[in-house]
Length: 192
Ligand SMILES: [Fe+2]
Ligand SMILES: [Fe+2]
Image 1 (cartoon, rainbow, N blue to C red):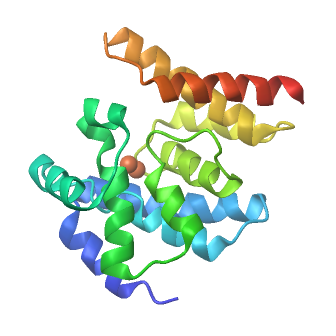
Image 2: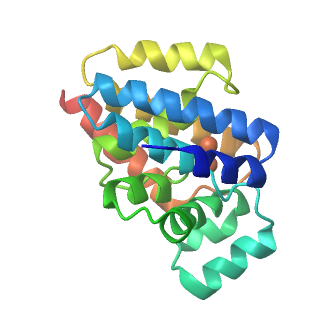
Image 3: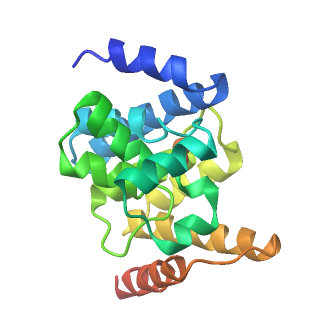
């Protein structure tokens, strides 16, 4: 696939750091896809587009949401999560992405969802452990968890634990869905 048009659009619509993060996420998603026997090309594309609306203003995000999308109530609590549904919307409208797996992975890369597919999980994780902008020590921790048996769920659980800890530390509210996903991952990790 030729990514020239997408890369140009991303360069025009993201700041430098976010563009760098995007390239890292796409590459990391491709590597994780290979590791878990998933479609590398689709993973690369999902990685490229996962944050495409990240640098839109809050007004623009809300405008697109109000006119076109349904979002979770808790997503409206934190503007930082709003770029995920809008990025999926832009991927479909601007780049004609119709693949449901790609759109789902982009849509749920911030909050996650209860029934995440392996494809959703690798995009979620690639976003957290891409080497270009993420903390090196944290990336190493997650990468080493991924090597364990049932590593995908264990790595995801680690991410949710860190997110919940960080929200508590900052006196921020925790979305009920986040707790539900955490509980489900605890079950999945302890079954195996
Ligand atoms: Fe994001
Ligand atoms: Fe991201």
